[in-house]
Image (cartoon, rainbow, N blue to C red; front, top):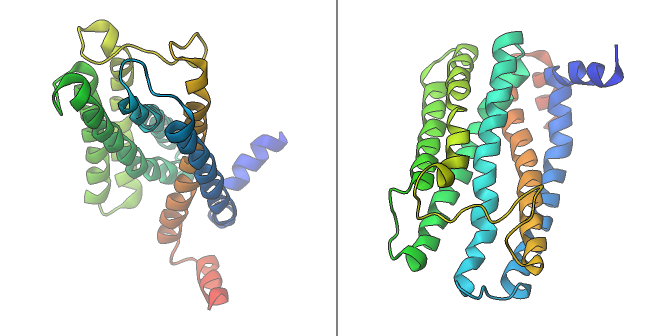
Length: 249
């Protein structure tokens, strides 16, 4: 068996995953926080004001990374859910369900910062703009998944039901991404590109990429921490959990 495949099989063991998450979740949290702190400092004190929007554009450094994370986490959640449904891998169920609260938080931040940014730009806190509306639907999908997961007592059945909802809901992601192109929209078009040319001054990009990288690393830490907690709840009757609890006393 290939060493990488063997490692993934080993990672699926609840005791091994617990040790892995306990070790790396704090590391990811600290690294993510440091990178985001660097990005925020650059966004607030280094980057010059925008020639049209003034200092109000600085909220972009929170809004854009949060928006990207809201969609990326949903896609990852659907990916884990698909693996769990096809191969019945319990760890993937746990990881999928651990994604939901974090993704919902990023989606809420996206909507809140978008409203704050929209007030001086559009003259209103909210408009039923296609991008805003589809992002709001994404938040409802996250909340629906969390509600469905907590409404069913059997954890594995609950994860499968909520996971199926995430797989269906992933069809919303391209609609969110292309909404500013498909419909007349108040929301500005794409100004930042991962692979193409960005329509921002080059001096404004380093703090933004720092925020993007920092949020991704911080997400890894949060995902591991939440998945570890769920893993321990599911395995609470097992001997290895009892031994670990006894050793910590």
